[in-house]
Image (cartoon, rainbow, N blue to C red; front, top):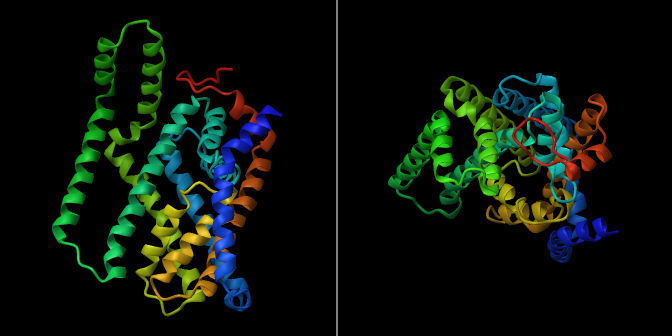
Length: 337
């Protein structure tokens, strides 16, 4: 009972936000027009989107396997990726932690070590999203941004990567420096140093430029699939939109999905997509029809693949949630209970 109340307390704000957005959308759209807009949906369009999303999971699995030093097989990586996306559609959005726990068990490594490789993915996802918006916002608003701004931004990104490369490359020296400044045997030292070691071990790919380049190639291939899926879906509903509009709509809806919401981002993603499309003169009703369709495919594809993954790998949702509650992240490759 206590667990149920705790879950409700944590998810209630997101549910309220989703409910408010859904009520607003329900009041401003013409549902007859929404229904008519669905005539743009064809079996070929559904198959194309599902295929592109599946390909994106396959590419992300290739990248993740490289980040994990080839410990898991590609098949293990693929099914675990789909399981993670399925878990992200559920309350509390436990997909990343769930992926870490599942894969940690498969490769016999600390979930924290695995989680650090997922954080690296998410960092670059955020970076790509920001780039999409920075490139497309001036086009949407008709404003001009000095090329110097992009040069400075690019330089800051490169410098940040170089610093991160250097820290990971010299991580043992960093640990020695930290140990010298932390009180030996203190509780803080016993907790912080193992955490740092696990995280930096997970980021070890940054210390190998060739492997990092291959990893980055597959991460970008994932985004190419997501971009292509959005472009194909937009052309199905609004064929006159310019191709570059996909950058803005993709980036804006991705940021909208980060807002606390009901499970699966219901409401907030639709609202963000409707707002993004309004910048291109698309009325609320057809925009909502597109948002519902696109989001539905984005939900159903990982649900189907994730459930298959749980079956193939002998996992169960109940077991994963139990392990999530009982697992403590450590640096020794084992679960501390």
